[in-house]
Image (cartoon, rainbow, N blue to C red):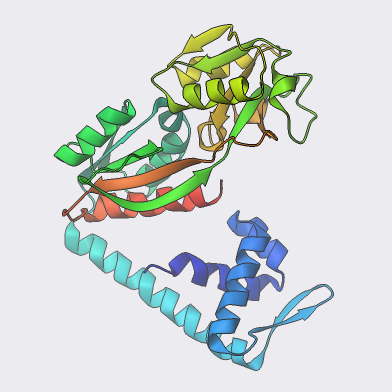
Length: 298
């Protein structure tokens, strides 16, 4: 069910009597949940929650709606279980292709959670370049692909695109770590670790430093996201990565991702794709749903 997550958010708001508390429980921003509630109220033409100084309470219309939502969620869960039994999801295989930074964090977290639910499903994760990811998905050698800055490509179907902000990444004991955001000029005061020229971030940062007329002589260049993160943990170096390459990684609690204030630093769109004109198997579809839920929180 496409809107299952939204229905669960509404159910949690009704149970807790607070948008903020519900947001904390489902790990989504309160503003995102509030926006969905406002959109739904506009669509229905009636409020579903009374806004009060210390929370929210269902209106009469909201009581009717939440009863329907809870019944719908129960039916959805039962239907999902029947589909799993029907398709024999107790055995199967999902192959995902992505850059190494996503493999080390996002896909590790999603894969472990998926394996806990479906222990007999085999997961294959391939760490590849963008061109290799596109080739593998188009050929059907990978069920799903995660690609930054996807170029126009007729062999792929885009399931969803997530905006992943590019930022400066430092250790939490770095002098810049107490900043809410940074300028490139501040980063230039420290040795820089940069992705090599085969990764889009290299071109973005080279252009941004040139536009800002700042000296740019990276101390390290590498195509290893793991090495980039390891180097900045020394407390001196600065690197540049998308939020999705830091979130969910083993180093997340030791790193700080800082938005860059310079104009012209583009958002890094991250596309979740599968092969065009092909139907995903049930296991891959369910794993894609899990990935979407994690990426929506970034």
